Figure (cartoon, rainbow, N blue to C red):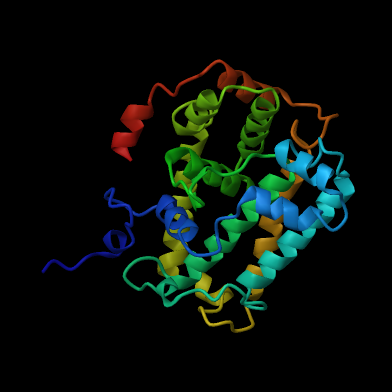
Length: 286
């Protein structure tokens, strides 16, 4: 029987390589990681707002429903603090199954880190006006658009050049009612996709170092709830704060938002259905 190399063992979607998409797919499949927008906003808003305003926030956005930016930011800070505590082992609350420690696939410490990161991403997106992640019958749909949206946010969190403009262009398109099929195309093979490829390349280097040099084991406790993770405790918050900062000032969250030239270019490309002409070639070459 052929012995699998490391890359083959970690290739969950069997596309011949291991990359950040395998991490995202695995993490989002774990219990408690998918966040339903309606349930989350109800939980966070019902204590201080009447049912009408909560319903409006769910139907439109919290900002459009009249929820103050101060309160939205306060909730966002609470979300970041909670998820940071979880990933650092201070509050091990989900009761993850033993499947996290999958030595034949993704190391538990890396899967744990990205799972909490993806959960924080969803909550921040919902607070600042983005729609629900696609789901069917209560289960998240792990299609190309969903995975690439998560990738884009991870790019913002890690300070990759251009990621902030791409996500703000997406926000402007959503705020102006651009057709869903154009938004899907932008993420799958259109205006945003060339940047998604750059994010994947960056994470290819990052994950190789983390997985095979043991970086994460210095910062994250192995599943079991041990207190620790000093490196992660700092890094996780800074990444989430970076995403929060960009989401605070978009057409979805701020009616007085002033867009940049780069942001407007993303928006125009999305609206006009720009397609990455190298998409098919790139997909086969990766």
